[in-house]
Image (tube, rainbow, N blue to C red):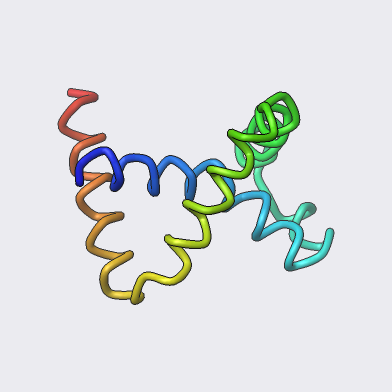
Length: 89
């Protein structure tokens, strides 16, 4: 279960900037900070270099994440953020 949650969160974090940017047109690109733009570009470059089977796996994980109820996603995000804060101390 832990591996699934980490995999889903990683997928979401990896793909969410790309999905959001593509869905909302390039006007949003102008509104991103340089740090956010750098993150999107890094994620895109990582995505371009992944083998096809890894891309497919991440797409499946992203679809699974998108199908989760909103409250479940929010709880998982909070748990992930709490762990990140705890691990970065």
